[in-house]
Length: 352
Image (cartoon, rainbow, N blue to C red; front, side, top):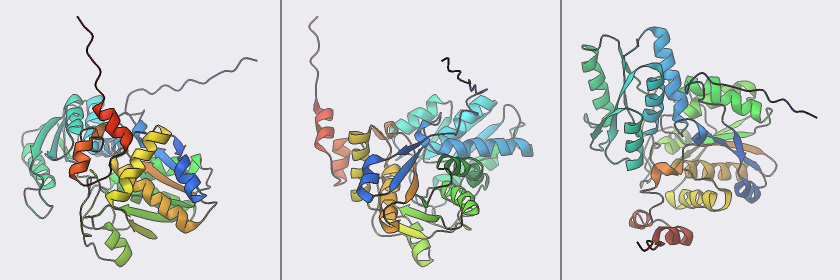
């Protein structure tokens, strides 16, 4: 019998963003007696969940008339949102300027340049400092508006409600459809909060009993906010990039969270290595926090439940840090033997 396959052709890279699969995380599921599913956002064109926000923010700016062909997109970002913005901007005929803390991984910076973004690297300073990268990006956007005839979009992902809208109109509906509505819990970490706010709002409209959780790295303030009502940073720090919000923003102001977990690097990092060694998933540090949080939520709900989390981005963004034994040892974090071996193997050069 002949089987006909319907072709799906996207008109450009923008249309290719989203519709990522759900992947069952076998070892996490076996350890909890639950079904733990990861939304494979690393399979987006820009290899991260932030492609969705980049797409939505630019398309909405077009609708408002804020951008015309040849216009400029400006953003302060730890990397992934900038990559998503740069990809969409390039496809839609805009230029991109990204302000990034100099401490972010080399791989993210290289990818931003490859995507055509103009990079402005600045010292990593707290948000309270006027020279924090987010404030510098806002000032640059304001200054450039005077000389850009085709418009300047300051994406402003922490305050721009088109960010959570991206997940309300795409990620949330996809999860609901892919699980056939059989989802008991959703959990992820917070960078801007767009993913959590948008997905949770949609899922709660479908089923008010779905449990929403937050997994927070040390040094951020979301654990205290959702546990005790005050956005107060917890003690310690984390090597994870792109997550760890320290204040209440418009994006998360109305988010409803049932459970909050504080996930130290010592718990999250082994999860990342385990996913790579046993399930072939090479992912970034924030995914370790997410999956560790999903395991905690699953254990709290009990066997037989379905929990969904976000596999945020590809691990190739962090090869010089997360997958570098010397760096990890400098942070007093565990390094598996297989990573040590792969990092030290030397292949002899062929004789000429």
